[in-house]
Length: 181
Image (cartoon, rainbow, N blue to C red; front, side):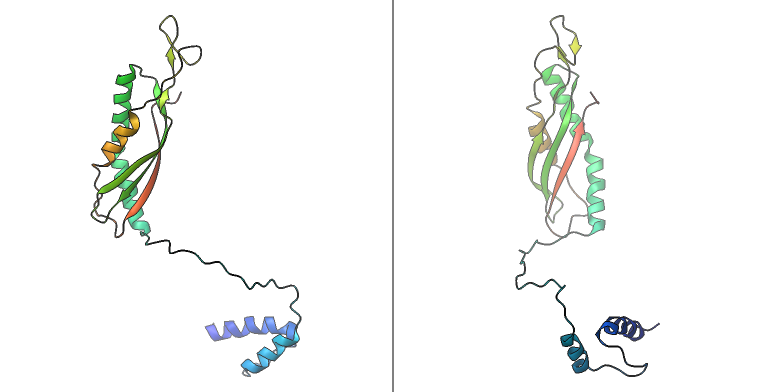
């Protein structure tokens, strides 16, 4: 079915309530259509004299580029585990785990040129009690892994994305390190 035929069917369906439709082969002129429109009461329609304007949201990357970025992040994920291992040694505790979020910008050269850890909840999940046993409750207050954010920022600064995105791209990564507690 041609586009013209589909439009005619849709237009006729809409015009039935306005007083009918011409026979096949006869076209309604713009003036006739406007007159039929003016005769109908459209009280139930919503109208506004206001509209929203939006700032330019900037350039975007393609879904393919986003997929390649995700693959590269998966290749580098071991860096987060390395930072966790460093914190476990610093805190002298193997029961360190948690969630974190990091925001970083990838430039058109494929380099990460801005990094910021925006959330860091990596901390001891078990601490020593008075007898020196690691327990989930009743031990010393848990310490946070304060060096984790700096380590992640340093590791991310060395990441390279190949192929690079066509425009600068800011990515937020939400991750989890350590074993479930």
